[in-house]
Amino acid sequence: MRVGADVTIIGAGIVGAAVAYRLREKWPDAKIIVLEKEAAPAQHQTGRNSGVIHSGIYYKPGSLKAVLCRTGREMLYDFAQSEEIPHERCGKIILAVEEEELPRLQNLYARGQENQIPGLQLLNSSDIPAYEPHARGVGAIYVPVTGIIDYGAVTQRLLARSQAEVHYRQPVIGITESPNGYLEVQTPTERFRTGYLIACAGLQADRLARMQGLRPALQVVPFRGDYYELIPEARHKVRHLIYPLPHPTYPVLGVHLTRMVDGRVEAGPNAVFAWAREGYSRTAFHLRDAWEALTFPGTWAFFRKHWRIGLEEYRRAFSKRLFYASLRRLVPALEIRDLIPARSGVRALALTPEGTFWDDFHFEVGPRSLHVLNAPSPAATAALALAETIVQKALSTWNPSTSALTTGL
Ligand SMILES: Cc1cc2nc3c(=O)[nH]c(=O)nc-3n(C[C@H](O)[C@H](O)[C@H](O)COP(=O)(O)OP(=O)(O)OC[C@H]3O[C@@H](n4cnc5c(N)ncnc54)[C@H](O)[C@@H]3O)c2cc1C
Image (cartoon, rainbow, N blue to C red; front, side, top):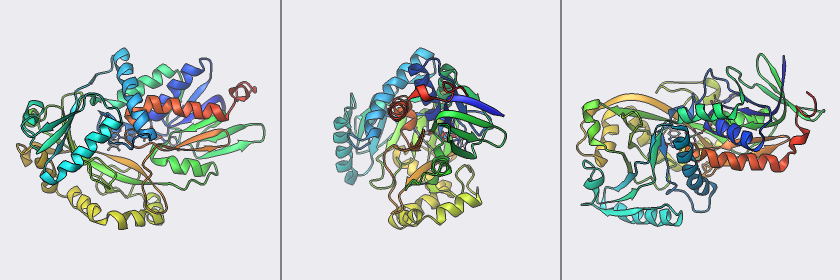
């Protein structure tokens, strides 16, 4: 069967949903289709993240991440407010636990100011209990604009508001160019003709680009993050969000304590190389995913650069005691029995063949298509601003008047 559309979006994560929403704003009568291989939206990174609305403090000033996180954060707060999606602008603290971390704390504070994060405060150790009574540190940064939200709920609402036709259980397995000026997008059961294609496939992003014949230099390598949850009696030990200083070179923020919008408190995630892009247990294994990761030179180069911290992360993934030790540094009042194992998520880390992680959002433009190749954290926070950029880029390379529907498909 053939279905025609002006624009087809692959992926019903938050980025695909936000693109559908922004496209609808720009183009009210377009036929927009979203193809999602799962039975529901937000089943991968979007539905398995920490639920934090990031401030934008961490990112290289002037980078897309820094700019789009700052603007996207406020767009997200506005959207959540007008749509009555539960959220809270609760603030967070970032702790320096040892004296030797203080210069890094100062640097992060300076970066936050460069990134124009409003209301940042440098705290000394005696100020900390006023914000988090059970946290301990030699200094901290208080970030008042950080918040919490359920990104699965945001994704569902964006899709509903976009009025896109969402086709679930439709894994895209082929993308071909037709000589008549459109693309054909193939799933096991249907063929979709489209004027333009925007692929927002998260952990599968590089594969979708290669499926269309593009040759992206970046490859997605999966890194799993496990969470624990605090038992209800221990939740009072965390008021809002408590973060360590991020590791200077490893591309994650470090295990943190996060109050969720439903009142639960989660701890995590760690970051370990994963044998499956969409496997959520410690022993998940997928032959193609593992083969592709281990035959990619970038993976080994990354291991060589980060072997020490990688090993520590691996040991912690299998040891509740080590996980607990990382959290106890931040909140000494925690006890090991306060922690129960919870869910996990997998991050798509885009690596170059030299083993460097690509630290910014990245797109590949193909014929009548745009592939979002790298949308790591804070892409959930930034989604509404990121989607604006994606739609602008798409419209700058493509004229909607030549779309599938208007060419009579
Ligand atoms: C553990 C963890 C914690 C995080 N914490 C935060 C946080 O607190 N705040 C924040 O801002 N960001 C956070 N992030 C990052 C954020 O979640 C992601 O950057 C964001 O969700 C990316 O959205 P996406 O739509 O690109 O990808 P995804 O949510 O992964 O969606 C991609 C979709 O594409 C679909 N798809 C893939 N291939 C195909 C195909 N062939 N055919 C059809 N459909 C396909 C998938 O099924 C999936 O639904 C975190 C990420 C992780 C993993």
